[in-house]
Image (tube, helix red, strand yellow):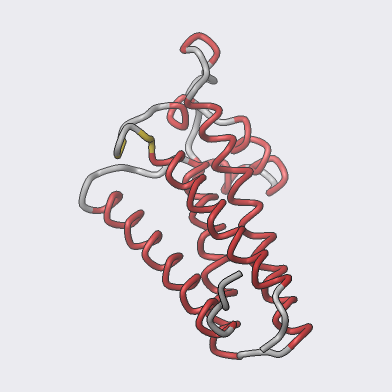
Length: 165
């Protein structure tokens, strides 16, 4: 097995990947006019969670158990991202007659509902979440995001099980 760079470099690379993912998301929103649906917003939160933990771990440079704590939190955030992106991909592949109807937006839900119901409403999805309005190489944005989260999860798991520096 090839020797991995030290944990700080690996964490910095994960943070950089998360930063680039967020910059792409913001570019698509502000320059291409793609408004994020509620599931997209939750995916952004998960990317930010992984990125912030990786950045803190890179700056802190913990040893042994500290490295594993950061990697564990990154793994949890990446798993959340896999779940949300997977749900999003699933919604996009539903037959048209099974797609949930569009309802009020995330802003309304946050203002009007307790957080547990907001999460429930987001995971139910809506018509806007099932719409494919951007593709690259035949894959929708949620498919790319799912692959990103799988990669981030693998990187976090490597950090979790690797021997301390």
